[in-house]
Length: 284
Image (cartoon, rainbow, N blue to C red):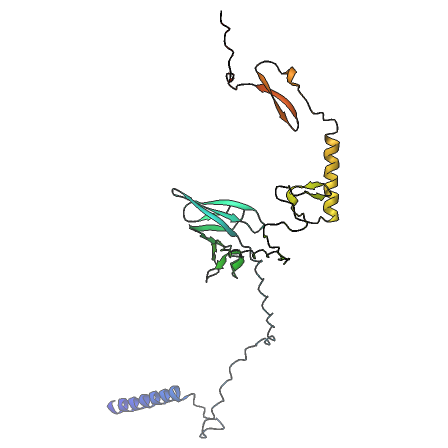
C-alpha cells in the first residue's frame, strides 16, 4: 500500500506539473505541425485610422477699416473776463460768431448751447476750455489766442494783444515861394489884402467859403449826393414860413427871441435898470 501510495503521488505530481506547464506556456497540441519550431509572433495590429476632414484654405483677412477723421476743430475766442466777488465769468465769441457770457459754476461748467465744451478755469486775461472727445483741440490758433494742451483735451484761451498803431506821418510843409522882398518887410505883396481889409471869401459851388480856406475838390458822386440832399430839404421845408413878431405886438412881461427858424416869446425876467437921469420934481 505504501509503495502504491508513493506511486500514486508521483503520478499525481507529474500530472500536476504537466497541467501547470500547459497552462503557463500555452495549450499543448500533440499533433501540431510546427511543434518544436520557434513560435512565430504575429505582427502588432496597427491602430485604427481616424478620419480627418480636409483642412479648409485660410480665409483672407480683410484690411482694417480706415479711421474716420475727426470733425473740423471749432474754436472759441476770448473777449474778456470778469470777477464779482466769488463769481467768475468769461465773455466768449462762439465759432458761429455769437457772443455769449458764460459763468463758471464750480470746477467744470458746460458752455450753454454748445454740447461737449466745458469751461474749466477763469483767470485774468485767460481761461481754459475742455473740448469734446470726438473733436479735440489739434492745432493752435494764435490769431484767436487759442493754444492746445499736450493731451489735446483742453485749450488755453488768451486775450489777443494787438500791436500799437503806427503814428501818422507828419504833414508835408507847404512849398515856400520866394518872392522879391521889399525894403519894408511889413508892406503887403501884390494880390494880398491890405492891413485892416477882410480877406475875400472863396467861392464854391454851394456858396462862399469864409476865411478863404481851400476846399477839397468834390467828386461827381459827392456833388450828386449833395444836390439830392439839397432837393430833399427844399421839398421838406417848401411850406415852412418863418414866424415874425413885431415889437409892438410883444405883450408886457414878455420879450422876443429871434432865431433863424422864427421868433418866439419868452418871459422877461430881466431886472429893469433905473434911468440914468431920473426926472426931478419941479419946485412948487
